[in-house]
Length: 287
Image (cartoon, rainbow, N blue to C red):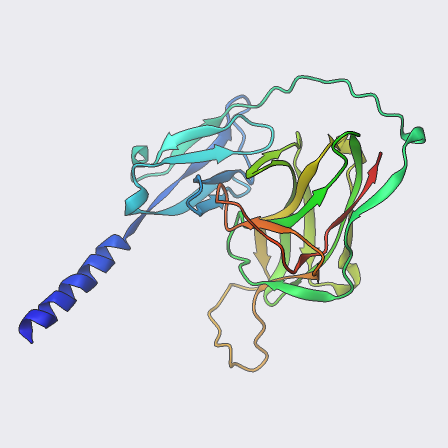
């Protein structure tokens, strides 16, 4: 009996040790201007450990001891990607610099007058899909869309329906558009595109004008929304689900069954794709 009890205690202790983590924190700054890099993605590639910097470029991330020898990846549209060893961070906040990306200007001639507009994707009717992980900065999900492989498509606008719930005053989302090649997702945007979601049901229909960004794509793409900031009406508190008037914090989307859904849990996380009910995202494109 004593031997069994000792073995059980040791097993529990091993689980506790394996579950230990440590916090790393710092500030991410522009190497040229020395200004904060806001809403940058930070994480360990494919491990679903990540976060997003705030308005001041500050970040805090809990990293399991088991990943101490991995690299932390820092990235944001408009900057060169940076990898830093997790075990190189000290006990105090470190300041890291991201180098601005210099894009080669490629002249694209598009005669809009000769192009036809078409809708790609599916609209929803009501808010039926609910996401309750509003505290997971960097959480991202969207839909896969197939465009012509032979003829370029100019993206005109991005449409969806969404509202916030519970104690959320507003949620700031980043629009991402990826070229998809098998399991590889490559962001084609050169500028950040943001949209704000609120609990105002009269403003749940969103249309994001994409023409100013001159986004020309072919073949399969993924259009996603990424959570980069949440502002609460009051300080978040733990509330029992049985409490009167309880409403979970989250974001509701109009959904559709005619969809190939993609997403990842956090910044730099592993992509997952499923053919099931997903967000009703659609584009108007010019071809």
